[in-house]
Length: 252
Image (tube, rainbow, N blue to C red; front, side, top):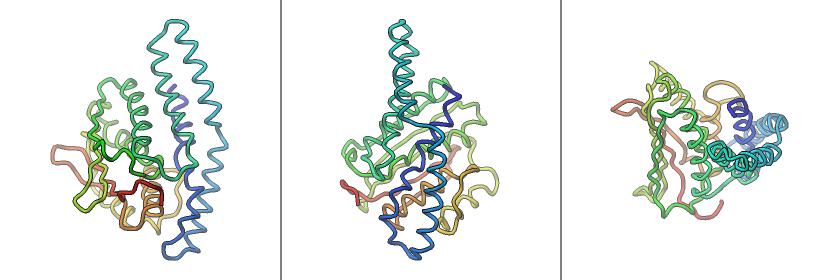
C-alpha cells in the first residue's frame, strides 16, 4: 500500500486545472491562460501514468477477497483506500460540497493514522456548512504538507485538527492545525511571499511547496482574489493553515 501512495496522490491532485479556463476573469488573462495551459499539459501527463479507475476496481477486488479470507483488518483498510479512490476520481468537478471534501479527507487520515499509530486527527466541522461548495481536492495537499513538514521530524507523534466555521463576515474559514515542529528560521517568510505573489509563481511539479501553491492558485481562480490561504504559528508549537472561502451553496 505504501508503494502506491505517492502515485495515487499525484493522480488525484491538480487535475481540476482542466476546468479553470472558464474562470479567466482576473487581470492579464492572456498570461493566465498560457500558465493554465502549461499546468494542464503537465497534469495530464502525470495523470497518464496511472488510471485511477483501474486501481480503484483492483483494490476493491482485493478487499472482497480479504474479507472472504476472514482478514477483516486488511479488508477495513482496503475499504478506506477504496473510499479515497472513489472520491478522488471525481476530479472533473472544480467544486464539491464540504461534506464530500471531508469524506475524502477522513478516508485519507484513517489510512495515515493506521500507518502511524501515534498520529491523531480531530474534527470540528459546523454541520450547517456541509452543502457549501469548496474547491475540489483542497484539504488533502494541505494536510499532507502538515504531516511531511510538521510531524515527520517528530516521528508522526502528534495531532492534526481540522475545523470549519462560519466567520462574522459571512464566509467560511477552514483551519488545519498541527502540533509539529513548526517553521524553520526564515521558512514562514518565504511561504508568505510565495502565497502573496501566487500569480507570479511559475507552475511547479516538484519541490515542497507544489501542493499549497496550486491550492492557492485554484482558490483565487475559482472563488476570487479576496479568498485564499495563509499560515500562522501556534503558541504551543506547530502551525495553522487558514483557508478563507465564500459561503456559496452552488458552484460559481
